[in-house]
Amino acid sequence: MAVDSETMGLRLGRDPLCVVQLSAGDGDAHLVRLSRPDYDAPNLKALLADPAVTKILHFGRFDIAMFKLHLGVVTAPVYCTKIASKLARTYTDKHGLKDVSRELLGVDMSKVQQSSDWGAAKLSPEQIAYAASDVLHLHRLRDRLDDMLRREGRAELAEACFGFLPHRALLDLAGWEEMDIFAHA
Ligand code: MN
Image 1 (cartoon, rainbow, N blue to C red):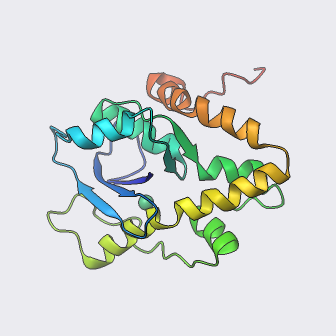
Image 2 (image 1 turned 60 degrees about the vertical axis):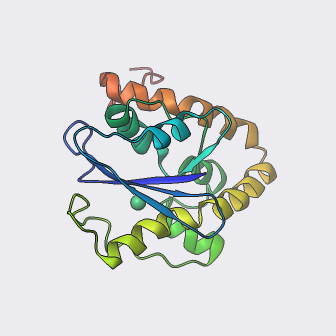
């Protein structure tokens, strides 16, 4: 299941979670507008925590932390297309969803609506189209990146990183957001 979210900003603890987008990879996207502050969304919470469903995200670290903070669930298992891109596409430092999608899929994504008011009472057609586009290509992206990871002999390393990713998000929430616990200093 491809998963993305839109928030009021990028700061954990300050900015609320507003919208969660889902796609099963069939060309349809489903948008869940969350009620605040109760975040009553039992089906969504069950899906995110379902051990039988791999959640495909781009920079999942942020979404997973947001979901834990607001929905109270640890999202797992996960596949992060940004981590896969960093491990496979070492010839570039452009790992944003727009750049990766353009190169690997030939898809041009607009990022114009990225910083818009996702807490609005009614979302605009442009916001809805933007939110949907963020999950519609993640399955194909994963397939392309998996090919590259296998070719470069890094599929296992990527798997291990995806396994650790939910814990990385929990470290962010626990106060280690800026600190690299693997660093020497
Ligand atoms: Mn998005």
